[in-house]
Image 1 (cartoon, rainbow, N blue to C red):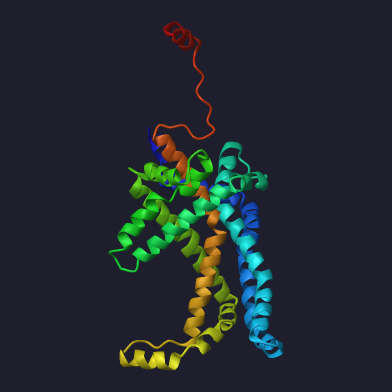
Image 2 (cartoon, one colour):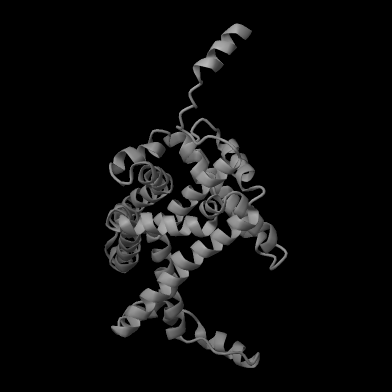
Length: 319
């Protein structure tokens, strides 16, 4: 009984999840390389070419329409790279769940393409699913416009729907609407434990790793060099007027360096969050397995228990 309680705990999920991740860390990092860096490269190319060459294009173009067309054409390569990387990243939300299932059942993570097909062979349904997730995300953000009052329903909302990607992966017969309903059914009765798991995963996979990388960059004197790349943003803002108002309100002034540091930390935490997606997907997949078992249900793909010869004979006699 005690062993069963341990295996159904969120700490067991964390331990097993980290074990699966670190035993296959090279494969997971390689798999996430293009989905993460491709988005960054795509955005740099898009804004670098369009903003960087905008003045030269405007000076040489015959008219404004020609200039806009050329700038648009310059943006296309970067946008294509970004969109491909973004799609691969969204596919990873499902593929990583399938990889976890493979790691649990076989002890190995391999054949990435077959795991990707869990999403790509249902592309239209998956796109509809992502649209629903995006819509609900926007609703959640709008709810947070009202501090505290909006935060409580938003948190409850996310906890109940935290397993929607696992449901989509492991229960392919369900519709988009049923995926959300199913996630809510699984979390119901285990809301607090799911909430704690969500907090621990967010704290470890985003905050701790981000701070760790930041400390390393500070030690090798890389932080200031990176932050200086974003100084142009602060220089373009009317900080003189902003700081005048802040001084009047007796608040701390905003410097160019502070803005650059905020941008740097935001980008760093985003990159860390995207690269650490496997950790969260693995743990949520394990938690999904536990909650299904706790509901007394079989996991998708489980074989039905064989009936004994006596039971089969009795059923035939009853018929």
